[in-house]
Length: 413
Image (tube, rainbow, N blue to C red):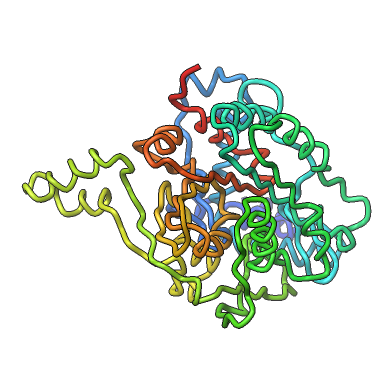
């Protein structure tokens, strides 16, 4: 035994390597799995349960092996520190990509977007989404305006690394315009934003557009909808100069430059988050709470909540973009100072856009299909009698969102 130990000691690096693997594996197995990553601002994969369904699954993203790989990738010990180390190492090697983030000039970052997502059944998800939106617009002809915001890589073309094969979004924009036909106004903002490409339209460290980018989108919408746009002249701005977004969280670029996040306090207003959209359901909850048959904890989960469009407390936390529209909620209602009603069906790109609508409408209802409960979009349209409907998505989220089929939920054929 002593001779074997002496033989091993001739290879100290090998001994240290295996000792590290052993100790790391033991430590990793004792650490509780995290539910969320504050750094990356997302929910982390949890340990999957092996079932007959995921063992026999044919779709790659439903297989047990795939689910377990996602779990391992999200839950290994010291994940944030390893991402930082990987970023530094790849920067030394002059690589322009790390953890799904592509580095451009002047400190810019771009979400790696080289291929379109496959649908759960067949074909591309974007094709299914175009079909869903086309069917929805055909049921409500003349009501909707569809605004698709191009990705930053389609606007800031001069800052991209040479040869980066980003998805060309133009042909898909054309296909969507053709599918909508005369049933809806279609706004492709690519040309609008390219006309201001030298301005601060997209965050360097985040996948969203800036408040200025959203304002140019709002001007295009106001013109199309026949509305008088609000002017930014004379409006004081607030915000933070220490914003580090989701792309930084993924890449942990060591020499990153902070972004500036801006909002306009004069455009603030109260907003009601409706947990249950149907009035009868809400009344049942109120009656049950008054009768004492619903606990306070249960009531808090279901009761409406009144907040501000700008939650400035979020400027003190990592996810500063969540200050807009109180993050993402299924259904919100805002009282404006204009006339008429509008519904906005949206992804998170609309969160900094919506305050600009305050002066144009008396009622602004906001729907996020990912979290909408107790109602369908058609039932809301029938009940509220909206004057306008705005569907606002970024191209990347539009191309991959699996919830857009809910636009047609409950619709009669």
